[in-house]
Amino acid sequence: MDKLVISGPTKLKGEVTISGAKNAAVAILPATLLIDGVCKIDNLPNISDVKMSCKILEQLGAKITWITDNEIEIDTREINCTQAPLDLTSKFRASYYLIGSLLGRCRSAEVGLPGGCNLGARPIDQHIKAFEALGAKVEVAQGKITAKVKKLVGTSIYMDIVSVGATINAILASVLAEGTTTIDNAAKEPHIVDVANFLNTMGADIRGAGTDVIKINGVKKLHGNTTYSVVPDQIEAGTFMLAAVASRGDILLKNCIPEHLDCITAKIFEIGGTVEDYRDSIRVSMNKRPNKAVVKTLPYPGFPTDLQPQMGVVLSLADGTSMIHESIWESRFQYTAELNKMGAKITAQGKSAVFEGVKSLTGAPVYATDLRAGAALLIAGVVANGETQLYNIEHIDRGYENIEEKFRSLGANIQRVVEPNANN
Ligand code: UD1
Image 1 (tube, helix red, strand yellow):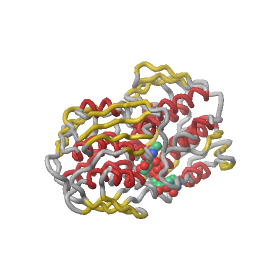
Image 2 (cartoon, rainbow, N blue to C red):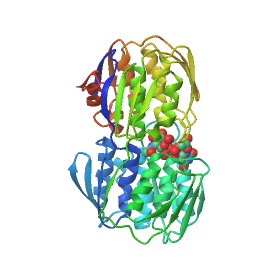
Image 3 (spheres, rainbow, N blue to C red):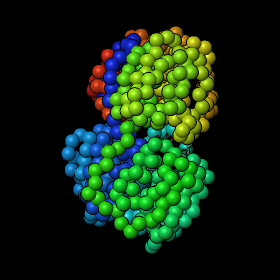
Image 4 (cartoon, helix red, strand yellow):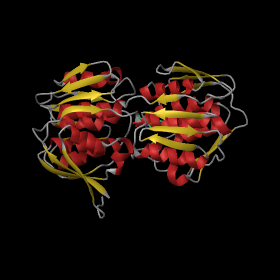
């Protein structure tokens, strides 16, 4: 098992290029199942969740050619199987998008219950509600979801909860339905807009993505013959912004969309940092101990839950006592126990945590409990005094492209080591 060995402290300085968004890519890839043709996708992040998605698509009949590490050509003219391989779908959360895509394309889908980060209960009742509203019969049994329909018919879907995954799945299932579908109380994350833009580029008619009412006028067919570029990753960009602040460094982030980062920028100003907006790049610097703050995670455009652990590292070093309220995932504070091993003083209970700021952290052996916890502990290792050994980094590889190379290019002293007997 690989681990990262990080020697700190380092003030991160220099330039970093942000990759394509993981959460957009893992939805756009299954969305290609709706296309009866060949398309190219570029700015794909080279991460394990993307490779897994491609493997699944190949098993369903898609033909994929890798043009570069970040660009593929995908031919979905012959989809000959509607049963997604259970061993692969159980490994990551976004495999649930195969249900909406297969249902839309083949009117039938059999997909294993999704895996992914252990962040607490991750129900999919809103996804199922959307499929049923469109006319599908859905069954959950023996660890898999089966959905079948003779004809998908457009309808009104009201989401009881703002859900990224259910919003995208409802879009996927309705793009080729007969008539118009309306999704009320839709999620508004940048990657929802990106999936809609991708599908519209291929001939779909989706309006209102990025607002809380999305309208989909069903079309007969989606064509290929187009190249689509995945949107820059809001969460990777936010991770480097917060790494700049935690390390009291100065980083220029290239290939990002500053308006997607407004809520993080606002918090960085509040805690005493500086952010300069250059339209498709952003420079973040910090030259003092951060001020304390109160943070509450919310659906977009609120502060993203996927940046909560990275913000937790910053606040663990703040001058004064800070609070974080997590409103999306019940088990998102697992990283705090690891951070406390490095000298942080965090008390987490339920959906809130109190951060009594300390002056510095000290290196220690720590374990990534999930993807974003891994990114947070990596930042902690960079800013801590001494050596940190970070285990379970397969979580990080699911969502960050070339993470150690990117941090190394900013001055971090970080090595990947293969350790066969590591355990947690
Ligand atoms: C997506 C992201 C994940 C991010 C999360 C919230 C992907 C692949 N993953 O996950 O990184 O942390 O958005 O921004 O894009 N819920 C229900 N019923 C449902 C669906 C969701 O109760 O049917 C609840 C969840 O338990 C959670 C909240 O709604 O409390 C939001 O979840 P959702 O937006 O669906 O998250 P994901 O799409 O799984």
